[in-house]
Image (tube, rainbow, N blue to C red; front, top):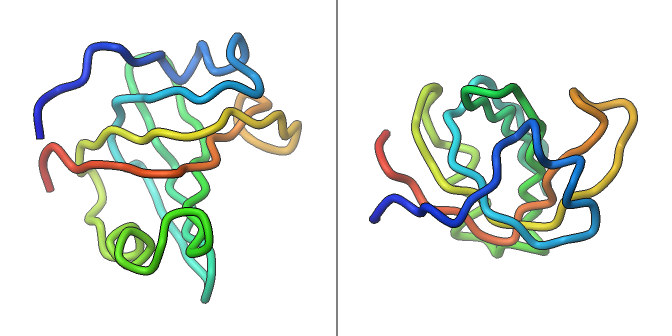
Length: 102
């Protein structure tokens, strides 16, 4: 996968509420259930929770999100959603992602 340059930083998610964006980040932490995987992404500007649901991404990407190693670098694409309980007050509802390096 080639590095995407048309991305926003995690700190700038607040400026893109309701929009589809792409972010380049590393996997800082992760957890999952039977239908949703949560990836805590980090970049040089901060952290954000990224929600990968089986329904939105399909079985293959959902399984990949569950297995991705910590500190993997990736590009996540999805909709920015306001959630005051999350780091920075926003999270990314992922529709697709690609892995640069595991």
